[in-house]
Length: 218
Ligand code: C5P
Image (cartoon, rainbow, N blue to C red; front, side, top):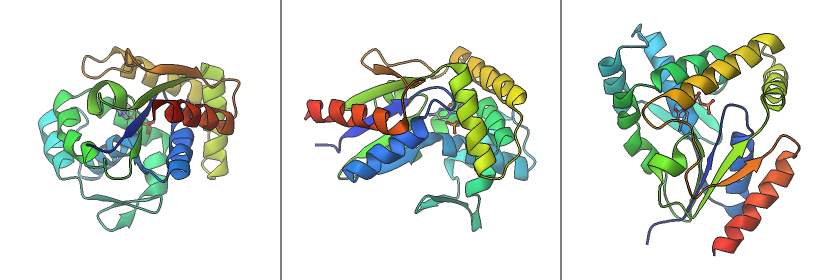
Protein backbone atom coordinates (compact mmCIF):
# COMPACT_ATOMS: atom_id res chain seq x y z
CA UNK A 1 0.00 0.00 0.00
CA UNK A 2 1.12 3.52 -0.73
CA UNK A 3 2.15 5.93 2.01
CA UNK A 4 -0.60 8.20 3.36
CA UNK A 5 -0.87 11.78 2.13
CA UNK A 6 -2.50 14.81 3.74
CA UNK A 7 -3.15 17.62 1.25
CA UNK A 8 -3.46 21.25 2.33
CA UNK A 9 -4.57 23.54 -0.46
CA UNK A 10 -5.64 27.15 -0.40
CA UNK A 11 -5.03 30.65 -1.68
CA UNK A 12 -1.94 32.79 -1.16
CA UNK A 13 -1.06 33.44 2.49
CA UNK A 14 -3.95 31.36 3.85
CA UNK A 15 -1.47 29.85 6.31
CA UNK A 16 -1.12 26.57 4.46
CA UNK A 17 2.69 26.55 4.48
CA UNK A 18 2.95 27.00 8.24
CA UNK A 19 0.13 24.56 8.99
CA UNK A 20 1.39 21.89 6.57
CA UNK A 21 4.95 22.13 7.84
CA UNK A 22 3.90 21.81 11.49
CA UNK A 23 1.53 18.91 10.80
CA UNK A 24 4.35 17.11 8.95
CA UNK A 25 6.73 17.69 11.83
CA UNK A 26 4.19 16.44 14.35
CA UNK A 27 3.54 13.21 12.44
CA UNK A 28 7.16 12.72 11.34
CA UNK A 29 5.99 12.93 7.71
CA UNK A 30 7.78 14.37 4.69
CA UNK A 31 6.72 17.81 3.52
CA UNK A 32 6.15 19.08 -0.01
CA UNK A 33 5.91 22.83 -0.61
CA UNK A 34 4.68 22.58 -4.22
CA UNK A 35 4.57 26.36 -4.59
CA UNK A 36 8.36 26.36 -4.19
CA UNK A 37 8.64 24.28 -7.36
CA UNK A 38 6.66 26.84 -9.35
CA UNK A 39 8.71 29.61 -7.75
CA UNK A 40 12.00 27.84 -8.57
CA UNK A 41 10.89 27.34 -12.16
CA UNK A 42 10.00 31.03 -12.47
CA UNK A 43 13.29 32.09 -10.87
CA UNK A 44 15.29 29.85 -13.19
CA UNK A 45 13.40 31.11 -16.27
CA UNK A 46 14.21 34.67 -15.23
CA UNK A 47 17.87 33.87 -14.71
CA UNK A 48 18.10 32.13 -18.10
CA UNK A 49 16.31 34.95 -19.85
CA UNK A 50 13.38 32.75 -20.91
CA UNK A 51 10.14 34.71 -21.41
CA UNK A 52 7.42 33.80 -18.87
CA UNK A 53 5.02 32.83 -21.66
CA UNK A 54 7.44 30.54 -23.52
CA UNK A 55 5.57 27.38 -22.50
CA UNK A 56 7.73 24.85 -24.34
CA UNK A 57 11.06 26.23 -23.13
CA UNK A 58 9.91 26.53 -19.51
CA UNK A 59 8.44 23.02 -19.55
CA UNK A 60 11.74 21.55 -20.78
CA UNK A 61 13.57 23.37 -17.99
CA UNK A 62 11.01 22.34 -15.33
CA UNK A 63 11.34 18.67 -16.22
CA UNK A 64 14.96 18.62 -15.02
CA UNK A 65 14.78 21.39 -12.43
CA UNK A 66 18.16 21.19 -10.62
CA UNK A 67 16.71 21.81 -7.15
CA UNK A 68 17.29 20.23 -3.75
CA UNK A 69 15.48 20.63 -0.44
CA UNK A 70 17.78 20.28 2.55
CA UNK A 71 16.62 20.95 6.14
CA UNK A 72 14.19 23.67 5.16
CA UNK A 73 16.62 25.26 2.71
CA UNK A 74 16.04 25.36 -1.04
CA UNK A 75 18.92 25.06 -3.48
CA UNK A 76 18.94 25.78 -7.19
CA UNK A 77 22.07 24.15 -8.57
CA UNK A 78 24.62 25.07 -5.87
CA UNK A 79 22.99 28.35 -4.80
CA UNK A 80 20.91 28.67 -1.62
CA UNK A 81 17.78 30.44 -2.92
CA UNK A 82 15.62 29.99 0.21
CA UNK A 83 15.01 33.73 0.56
CA UNK A 84 15.12 34.55 -3.16
CA UNK A 85 12.20 32.19 -3.97
CA UNK A 86 9.99 33.78 -1.32
CA UNK A 87 10.22 37.25 -2.89
CA UNK A 88 6.85 38.69 -3.86
CA UNK A 89 7.81 39.22 -7.52
CA UNK A 90 8.88 35.57 -7.77
CA UNK A 91 5.44 34.56 -6.45
CA UNK A 92 3.79 36.69 -9.09
CA UNK A 93 6.03 35.21 -11.83
CA UNK A 94 5.26 31.71 -10.47
CA UNK A 95 1.54 32.29 -10.85
CA UNK A 96 2.11 33.36 -14.46
CA UNK A 97 3.99 30.20 -15.46
CA UNK A 98 1.56 28.10 -13.38
CA UNK A 99 -1.20 28.73 -15.94
CA UNK A 100 0.79 26.85 -18.62
CA UNK A 101 -0.43 23.21 -18.88
CA UNK A 102 2.91 21.83 -20.19
CA UNK A 103 4.73 23.39 -17.23
CA UNK A 104 2.27 21.87 -14.72
CA UNK A 105 2.63 18.50 -16.43
CA UNK A 106 6.43 18.76 -16.32
CA UNK A 107 6.33 19.16 -12.52
CA UNK A 108 4.03 16.18 -11.79
CA UNK A 109 6.68 13.45 -11.39
CA UNK A 110 8.81 15.61 -9.15
CA UNK A 111 5.83 16.20 -6.83
CA UNK A 112 4.66 12.57 -6.77
CA UNK A 113 8.23 11.49 -5.85
CA UNK A 114 7.84 13.22 -2.46
CA UNK A 115 5.40 10.49 -1.41
CA UNK A 116 7.56 8.29 0.78
CA UNK A 117 7.25 6.36 4.05
CA UNK A 118 5.94 7.05 6.60
CA UNK A 119 3.79 9.69 4.84
CA UNK A 120 3.59 13.12 3.26
CA UNK A 121 1.95 16.46 3.92
CA UNK A 122 1.67 18.41 0.64
CA UNK A 123 0.65 22.04 0.33
CA UNK A 124 -0.34 23.98 -2.77
CA UNK A 125 -3.32 24.68 -5.00
CA UNK A 126 -4.06 21.32 -6.65
CA UNK A 127 -2.61 18.76 -4.23
CA UNK A 128 -6.03 17.24 -3.41
CA UNK A 129 -7.60 17.74 -6.84
CA UNK A 130 -4.83 16.70 -9.27
CA UNK A 131 -1.57 15.46 -7.75
CA UNK A 132 -2.81 13.26 -4.86
CA UNK A 133 -6.50 12.59 -5.56
CA UNK A 134 -6.33 9.50 -3.30
CA UNK A 135 -5.09 11.46 -0.23
CA UNK A 136 -6.27 10.22 3.18
CA UNK A 137 -7.23 13.71 4.25
CA UNK A 138 -7.79 16.83 2.14
CA UNK A 139 -7.98 20.23 3.77
CA UNK A 140 -8.75 23.50 2.01
CA UNK A 141 -7.67 26.56 3.99
CA UNK A 142 -9.32 29.91 3.43
CA UNK A 143 -8.99 33.28 5.16
CA UNK A 144 -10.21 36.78 4.43
CA UNK A 145 -8.09 38.89 2.06
CA UNK A 146 -7.27 41.27 4.95
CA UNK A 147 -6.09 38.46 7.24
CA UNK A 148 -3.96 37.02 4.44
CA UNK A 149 -2.42 40.34 3.42
CA UNK A 150 -1.48 41.18 7.00
CA UNK A 151 0.09 37.73 7.50
CA UNK A 152 2.13 38.10 4.32
CA UNK A 153 3.15 41.61 5.43
CA UNK A 154 4.43 40.29 8.76
CA UNK A 155 6.31 37.42 7.11
CA UNK A 156 8.08 39.78 4.73
CA UNK A 157 8.96 42.37 7.37
CA UNK A 158 10.32 39.63 9.67
CA UNK A 159 12.62 38.54 6.87
CA UNK A 160 13.79 42.11 6.43
CA UNK A 161 12.08 42.41 3.05
CA UNK A 162 10.33 45.74 2.59
CA UNK A 163 6.61 45.53 1.88
CA UNK A 164 3.71 47.81 1.18
CA UNK A 165 0.29 46.74 2.45
CA UNK A 166 -1.64 48.30 -0.41
CA UNK A 167 0.50 46.59 -3.06
CA UNK A 168 0.29 43.31 -1.17
CA UNK A 169 -3.50 43.28 -1.17
CA UNK A 170 -3.48 44.13 -4.87
CA UNK A 171 -0.93 41.37 -5.75
CA UNK A 172 -2.79 38.86 -3.60
CA UNK A 173 -6.12 39.54 -5.30
CA UNK A 174 -4.56 39.40 -8.77
CA UNK A 175 -2.76 36.17 -7.99
CA UNK A 176 -5.92 34.57 -6.53
CA UNK A 177 -7.90 35.61 -9.59
CA UNK A 178 -5.28 34.11 -11.92
CA UNK A 179 -5.01 30.90 -9.85
CA UNK A 180 -8.80 30.46 -9.67
CA UNK A 181 -9.61 31.37 -13.27
CA UNK A 182 -7.04 29.24 -15.08
CA UNK A 183 -8.29 26.27 -17.11
CA UNK A 184 -5.72 23.73 -15.87
CA UNK A 185 -5.83 22.74 -12.19
CA UNK A 186 -7.52 25.91 -10.93
CA UNK A 187 -7.55 26.74 -7.24
CA UNK A 188 -10.67 25.07 -5.88
CA UNK A 189 -11.47 22.68 -3.06
CA UNK A 190 -11.63 18.97 -3.93
CA UNK A 191 -15.23 17.71 -3.54
CA UNK A 192 -14.08 15.64 -0.56
CA UNK A 193 -12.00 18.39 1.11
CA UNK A 194 -12.74 19.82 4.54
CA UNK A 195 -12.85 23.62 4.37
CA UNK A 196 -11.21 25.49 7.22
CA UNK A 197 -11.40 29.27 7.55
CA UNK A 198 -8.29 30.41 9.43
CA UNK A 199 -9.10 34.15 9.63
CA UNK A 200 -9.79 33.88 13.36
CA UNK A 201 -7.50 30.94 14.16
CA UNK A 202 -3.90 30.78 15.29
CA UNK A 203 -1.60 28.43 13.38
CA UNK A 204 -1.60 26.08 16.40
CA UNK A 205 -5.41 25.90 16.43
CA UNK A 206 -5.47 25.06 12.72
CA UNK A 207 -2.76 22.42 13.22
CA UNK A 208 -4.73 20.73 16.04
CA UNK A 209 -7.82 20.54 13.87
CA UNK A 210 -5.92 18.90 11.03
CA UNK A 211 -4.31 16.40 13.42
CA UNK A 212 -7.70 15.48 14.91
CA UNK A 213 -9.20 14.99 11.44
CA UNK A 214 -6.24 12.88 10.37
CA UNK A 215 -6.54 10.71 13.51
CA UNK A 216 -10.18 10.11 12.58
CA UNK A 217 -9.15 8.66 9.20
CA UNK A 218 -7.00 6.00 10.90
O1 C5P B 1 2.03 28.79 -2.61
P1 C5P B 1 2.90 29.81 -3.26
O2 C5P B 1 2.49 31.22 -3.05
O3 C5P B 1 4.35 29.58 -2.94
O4 C5P B 1 2.78 29.51 -4.84
C1 C5P B 1 3.24 30.41 -5.82
C2 C5P B 1 2.38 30.27 -7.06
O5 C5P B 1 2.58 28.99 -7.65
C3 C5P B 1 0.87 30.35 -6.80
O6 C5P B 1 0.36 31.66 -6.89
C4 C5P B 1 0.28 29.47 -7.90
O7 C5P B 1 0.06 30.21 -9.07
C5 C5P B 1 1.38 28.47 -8.18
N1 C5P B 1 1.08 27.16 -7.63
C6 C5P B 1 0.26 26.32 -8.35
N2 C5P B 1 0.01 25.05 -7.91
C7 C5P B 1 0.54 24.62 -6.75
C8 C5P B 1 1.34 25.48 -5.97
C9 C5P B 1 1.59 26.76 -6.43
O8 C5P B 1 -0.25 26.70 -9.40
N3 C5P B 1 0.30 23.37 -6.36
